[in-house]
Length: 283
Image 1 (cartoon, rainbow, N blue to C red):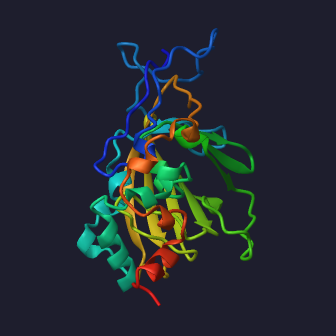
Image 2: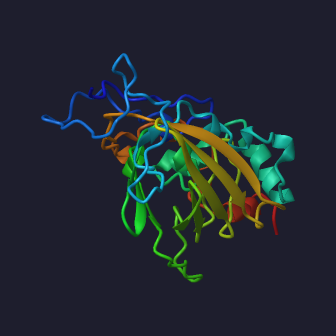
């Protein structure tokens, strides 16, 4: 069954992510061969509640096209623990308090088609495809047509690596969970639309656990001593989209509303630390 339409992202805080929804799609391919070893219910539908598939070596197979059902964590990554329990540094609390009513949406990197970063991009309600190779895991996101490369070959991140929007990711297996460690960020990311800030000291741990054929839990821990006094966490379940494929999504091609968003254009693209300094929250 082909995809018949895109998914709009709905949230009170506007950014270009929510203005450039995927247009309706028709079938992209002909003669698509059926997938092998797909479990089905008695009615013939894909059995999303069946046990997760495994490779010949017994390891859980994480591959497929995945998507969360909603954008709750794009709005607020602290939804699980509650805002009162976010262990802010004082400057980070003041910056978040100023942003959270949406009056600075124009300053959000998303509004300028810049990367959502990790872990935010995992939780966007657009499909993304996970592919395993012998030495890496590749994630291909419909969101802005971005990608991630996660190495499983034992390499480590060079401390002097050029700071990056998506960071540098390595992974290891712990039982049936793929544990991904990402560092080397540029300090410009907003963790969510509310505007929880980050610094270049951000370290993100993600645990990908495929609990059923059609469901995978992603547990995230944010550890950024530049912005927070202790690590804090979130968790969301994403769902398999059988027969779907990510579509091309060129954000810059339809980015017409950024000038109408509230906020100071001079603050766009700054690191969170520099933004806090300019506002007098940090010396």
